[in-house]
Length: 191
Image (cartoon, rainbow, N blue to C red; front, top):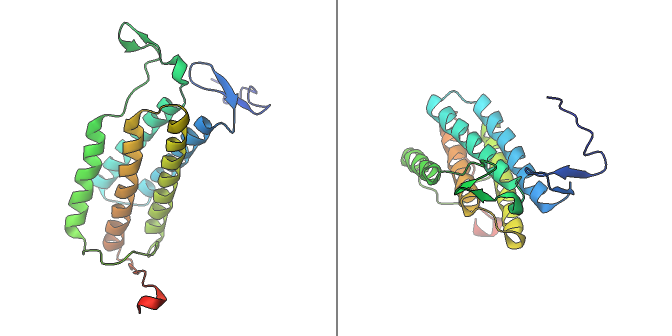
């Protein structure tokens, strides 16, 4: 399989199923941002040692690839044949959302209660986690924008929303595990 096809040289690309769209299409923006997020999740995974967290991050990356495949498919190509999607596009399992919630609960049990907003940073790996959280929110914004124009599988919207929360809690846990510093945001007028 060749990596370069030259079919995108004039600013268009193909969605899964063959539909051609401009590369600036909101659908491309949505799955491109999900792909960017996936790369940062891999970067986080490469910087931590905790096997349980690495396992969850691999599951997250798998779900993000699934979300990308769903987003990269033109809605008119999702034609059911004998009750199945003829393109065999996977779906995000609702249990994946529950997994994120359970993992957040487990991590939160170990963390001090939050009384203020927290400034991103404290350790390089924590900073990467906060960057991923921000990219996740951007992916969510792109997907909701797409959803207003062309319905998006709602499991993607829920998953991205929950994932950004997970990444925030993970950043706090990594701060604790890596003995980083957690700096509270205390506005000047509140001092």
